[in-house]
Length: 180
Image (tube, rainbow, N blue to C red; front, side):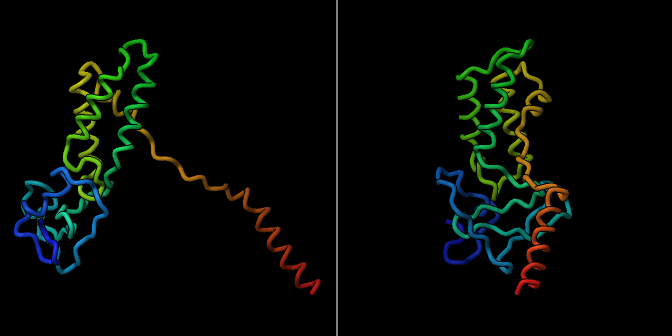
């Protein structure tokens, strides 16, 4: 396909082809710095050319967006949260299994949707909301976006909780010095 033996793709169009042609998503291997392609940073914007790396195996162009794409499981969780919210909602009807299945099939049919290497999160989010709107046109976009899962917070101990641990470590080293 695109660049198998370390050679550049023939064209940027060939480089954008990838796992969307029915191939399974794989571990992407980025091109070397001297193999990158000059492409537009912002689509259809003049004077925004920048060097982009691509996958040596499938030719997918690496996304340069600040917010990286999410795996398909993130959007499956979004559907579950939306279903739970609509379960007892007084204004909107439930999200039944048929709706969930149609939304999932719609996003799964999008080439490279679950590939964070080549698709930025904003594009994924927009396509997901459009899929929900196509199936359930009665739900406002703001309502769907509020149901988006939040990233898990890393649990960090508070500094106040670390003070006794630090004092114990300092006290243990003083005891060893005095006892030995």
